[in-house]
Every structure is written in C-alpha cells, then in structure tokens.
Amino acid sequence: MKHYSVAIDGPAGAGKSTIAKRLARELGYYYVDTGAIYRTLGYFFHLVGIGPKDIDGITRLIDECVIEIVYDDEDGSQHMFLNEVDVTEDIRSPEMSKIASDISAHKLVRDTLLEMQRDMARKHNVIMDGRDIGSVVLPRADVKIFLTASPEVRAQRRMEELKAKGNTKETFAKVLKEINDRDYNDSHRAVAPLKQTKNHILVDTSEMTVDEVIETLKKLVLEKCEA
Image 1 (cartoon, rainbow, N blue to C red):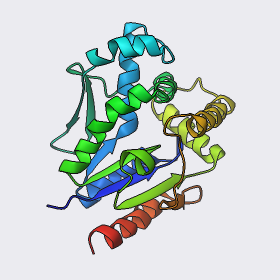
Image 2: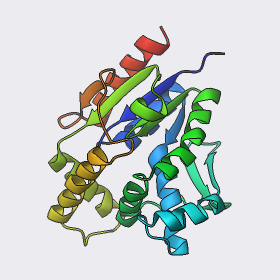
Image 3: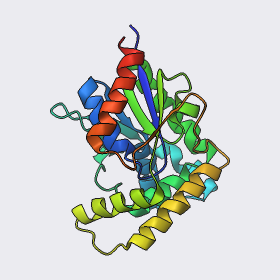
Image 4: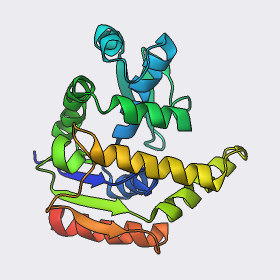
C-alpha cells in the first residue's frame, strides 16, 4: 500500500506546527512534529544536567533517553513521552526551543532520531514539519513545502502565543532577536542546515490567514497525492 508523505520546512515561528497539525487532521494524515522530538531529547539532557553543547555527555547518556510519540484517539493530537512520562507541555518553553536548536547541530543526535521519523513515513500517510525534512529526513517526500514569514511577523505571532499562555514578561525586541538568532543558527549549522531545496514550493504566510494557508496547501497535496 502506497503511503504519502508531505514535508513542511521553514524557520521558527512560520506557523509550521499549527498549519501541519490542522492540515493533517483535514486530510486524515498523521501529523509528526519533529521539533517536539528534538525538544523532548533536549528536555532529557536538561533534566540530567548535560548542556546542549556537551557532546561527550550527550554521547554518554543518549541511549538512556526513550522517546515515544502517542496520538490521542479523540482529536489525533501528538503527545511526547520521555521515559514513559508525558512531557508534551514541559517542552514548550523558549528555553527548550533554544536547547533543541543547539542539540540538533550534533550529527549523533540527528542520526539517532532520523530513523524514528522515517519509520513513521513508511507506515502511515504523514505530514511532517521541521527544518530539514525535505532535504534530509524525507528527501523523496511526495510534496515539499517551504513555509515562511518575515521575522517581524513571526515575532508578533510568538508574542501572541506567549500572552495566551499567560507569559507577559517577554518583550517584542527580545523575541525578535531570538528568532533572528535562531534563523542564523539553523541555516548556518554544519549538520542538516535549514534550506529551501529546488523541489520545495515556497509559501510566504506573512499576509495570509491560517484558513488561506490551509486551502493553499491542501490544494497542493491533493493535486500531487490524491489525483
């Protein structure tokens, strides 16, 4: 049985997770939030006191980290389990975002998590979002989309997300700087950098509503996968 895979890549704050999650629900695909996988691994090292750049410590303890993805039967939401504990909410902090970016630069980390991601695509129709899905994880994905928006728009979206969670301490200037720093780090890292390949379809969401983005992507996927 043929399984279809959709890769959605792009910088931090472009709306990849929100869009991919809803698109998967509407198409009946599995949504795989690869960033959550890296956040979970980063959270593990945070708990055991290993810094994200301590490659010796990461090498020594990485096998003690057991990550599992569980999908809610009712709404299909993805839950991340670390050594049998649900850490879905714990990994959604700016600190974990930074740690995830730092540890993802290590080849050992990427190689360790690569097979988990590819195995999902072999077994299910998937929509997978991240920063190197179309270039490294699923280079033969049926549809490759590069989702982006201006740094300012992405910073404003992040501010609104933080405010909704009750965090009113962050400033726009700080969030914008973090996004620009993350963009630079992700696109300049030696291992699997963020990049738009020639097969990616560029979609800039700066002036688009979520509904408009969903309709655009749905049309692209249906044209290529369900025709």
